[in-house]
Length: 461
Image 1 (spheres, rainbow, N blue to C red):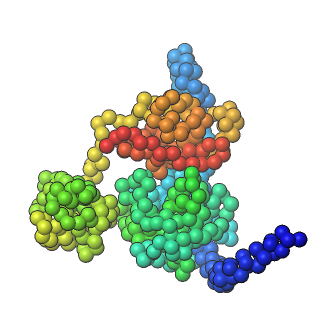
Image 2: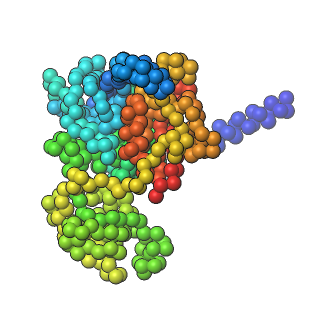
Image 3: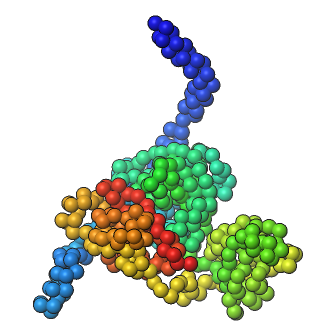
C-alpha cells in the first residue's frame, strides 16, 4: 500500500511539473499545418523514369573471355528496363517542373504524375550536374498550381520546415522538422551548400520541395545520410532559382569565370600575412590573361565581398562566382596590404575546355580502394536479396584496404558515387573517372535491403 501511495504521488508530481509542456504541445497542435499541406500537395509531383540497360548473360569475366576467344564474336546480350522514382514540384502554371539531376540522369523516358493520378510525358529542358538540379517541362491542358518560392537566406537554425515527396514510391508523403544546420558540404560537388534538416527524407524524396511553415519553397530535397537519424539535405532555393533561370533560357548554366584559384584563410595564414581576420577567399593563383589578371588582382589578395555580399570562406566565393553572369560589371572588395580596394570586373563565360585540375594518377578502385565489383546477375540478386534495380555488386574487399577500413563488405551494392547514379559497370567506371582524384569519395550503397552512405578518404590532395 505504501509503495502504491509513493507511485501515485510520483504521477501527480510528473503531471503537475509537465503541465506547461502539455499546454505548449496543445498550443502547437492547434496550429496544425494540415490546411497548408492540403493547399500545397497538388503542386508536388511524382516522377517515374525508365532507361534501358544492356547486360551480358556472362557476367563472369573468365566466361566472357572464353566465349569471345573460341567463338570470335561478341556475346549476345539482354536489355533490361531500369525504373527509377523521384519527386519534383511545379515551378510555373504552364508546366515547368524542378527536380534533381540525379533523378532524371540518363533517363530515356520521364513520366510526371500529378496528385490526382494524371500522367504526362516530360522532356528535359536542361540539367546542371554541378548543383544536381534539373528543369522539366510538361504540356498540361490547363494551368497548374505552382509553388511560391521563398528566401532560403532568411532561414535560421531551428525554423520549422516540412517536406512533401514520394519516398520509396509510396506516393505523396509529408514529414516535418526543423532546420538543423546551413551551409553543409557533403563532398558531392564543388558548389555544396546544403540545408540540413531532421524532417524525414528518404529515397524517392529526391527533387521534392522543402517548405517553410508559410508554405513557401526554401529548398530542393536532395540527399539523406542513412547512417544516422534526422540527417536530410536540401539545396537552398535561392541557388536553385538562379540555376533554373539559366536552364530555362539556355538549357545549361553559363558560369562566370574570373580566372583565379582560391583557398580559405587559416589562423596560421592570417598571422603570416598580417591579416586580422579569418574570413574571405585568399587568391593563391591568378591565371594569365584572365579577367582577374587584366583587372590587377594579385596572388595574396583576399576577396572579402562580391557586389556587397560578404564572403565568409572560399567555398562561398566559388559558388558566388559560378552564378555570376558573364559580361556584367561586378564589384569585388579586395583586402591588400591591410587596405580594402574595390575592383570592377567583367567575368567571361567559363572556358568550355576548362576542367577541374586533377591528380595525374587516376583512382583505380581495385588497386587503390581494394574492392572488386561486377554486374548484378539474377543469382546474385537472389543470394543477397538485392532490391536495387541498378548498381554494381562488390564481390571482394581486400583485407586492410581503404574500402575495408571504411566498412565495405562483399554483397554491398554500389548505387551512387559522389551523387552520380551507378546503373552498371560503365557508369561505375565513369563515376570513378569523374571523381577519382578527390580526397574523399561518398558511396551510396544498398546492404540487406537498406541504403547507407560510406565515405572513403583516398589520400588524394
